[in-house]
Image (cartoon, rainbow, N blue to C red; front, side, top):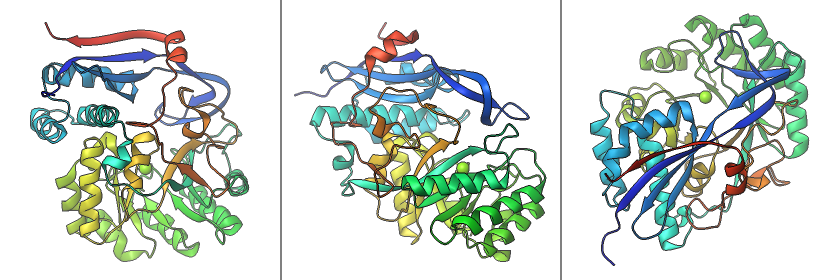
Length: 390
Ligand SMILES: [Mg+2]
C-alpha cells in the first residue's frame, strides 16, 4: 500500500435544541432557565481519504469549527493522514498569528482515521490499558432561576450525584455574584458530602480580584477540597499570581486550562504556577498535543486532568497513569439531554451515563470507537461546508 492521501475535508452542521437552558448576566455562561430553549449548531469534521476510510469527529459548535476549517482545509488536501506529528508542527507554525485550536479537531479526526485503518480503538494505539474511568459530576454554572440557585441546591445536587454513583463533584459557581455566596457554597457542599466525595471548585475565572480567590481558597482549605481551579479574572494565565496564591492556601490549585500548548504548560509548571496540570484536545493540539502535555506533567511528577468530556479524552485517560478523573458534564438537576444524542446513552455524558461504581467506559470500537447516529444528524442537518481538491 502506498501512502494514503487526504482528498476532501468537510464539516457537517446540524441543529440541537436544549430545553430549559438560557444564559446568565453577560450571555456567556449557559445556565438553567425554565421554558427557555437554546438552539445550538454542533458539527462533525470529516477527513476523507483515497483509501476509502474517513476520520470523523464531533468537533464542537459551528461558531468555532467553520472558522477553523477555513484556516486548515487547504493545507490538509493531498497530505498523508497518518503523519499527525507533521500536521501538528506545520499547523502550530502556520497558525502562530491566530489561535491554534484548529489543530485539535484535525488531529482527533486523524487519530479516528488511523484507528479505523488499523481496525483498533485509539487507546490501543496509545498503549492504553484502563477500560473504565472514574468520573466527576461537573455542574453547570449556578443560576438565579431555581435550578442551582443556592448553596442548599448545590448540596442537594451533590447528594443526588452521590446516590447515582459519583464519588467526586465539581462546582461551577455563579457569574457576577457576591463572594460571600461562593464561600457559603463551599461550606454547604463540603459539610454535606465532603466526607464521602472529592470536591472541586471551578469559578471559571469569574472572581473580580485575587483577594476574592484567596478568601474562597481559605474556605476550600476548611472543607479539604480536592482542587481549586481558575478562580479569578486574570483569565487563568498569570503564573506569578497563582504561585502567590499557592503560597497562601493549602488546597491544590489546577491551572493551565487557558494556557495553550506544550511549551506554555511547561513554563507554567516550572515557574510554580500550578499543582495539577490541565490539558485538553481542543486547547492543546488534539490527542497528539494533549498527550505531550500529559507526558510533560509525568516528567515533573505531577498529575494531569483533562478538560471536559468526550470520546477522545476517554482514549487519552486510558493511556495516562498520572491522572485522576474524567470530567462528566455539564450537569444540572433540572436540565436533561443537553448533549446531541448521536451516540448510545453511555457515551453522552448525561447524569446517568455512568456505571454503579461511578465510572465511564472506554470505547472499544475502531478509531474513536462509537458509531455516530447519522440518521439523527441527517434529519437535523443544516449545512455541509466543504474543502475539496480544485
Ligand atoms: Mg475549567
